[in-house]
Image (cartoon, rainbow, N blue to C red; front, top):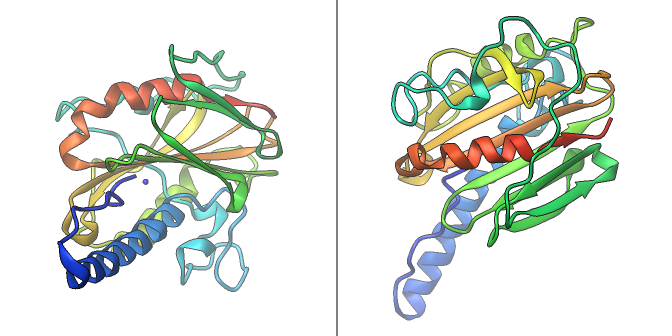
Length: 254
């Protein structure tokens, strides 16, 4: 999930401006679709017909139990080294999440209705009031992060978000332009909580982009969360500290 959404330099003149605006609109629509693709699933979205488990006809209606998860970063930053968010646990973590650690200079933000608190780097833009208690954070140079939540989460009785992520990956693998799964959809931890991880690359509007989509459930199992990172491929390796710091600053409130 963040990101082929970077705008490109426009052409001069009125004709160039119109072309730039059209291209930007197409790109924005594509990125929005991918954000929704990666951020539905355990968050209460079901199939387009509202039936749990039905293959969605649009990203906004992805089945909650079939939401995709980012995969093990087996070929990522540096290539071959997995991001710290995706290290598989020896066992699922039944206890609470780790205490949040906010990096110096970052801005803290709490979404009480969504059951989470986060922090984001200086210079990033925050957008709130999105579907599924969503909050998006955009750097402006192509990197995006989006958080969504649901109460209660739609997961199996054992609280494992992985089966849903596997199902969603299978559905969307044939629908994202230039899609390539990195490694496999797998279980891991996120901020000390049991997680499903889905990592992939795709090419929206001709720009190679790396997605990392993580779903997890609060220790009380009362809230389900998803965190999506969409990062230009050429900045993926240098963005690992950003990914790790955002994870450490996350705090479930329910």
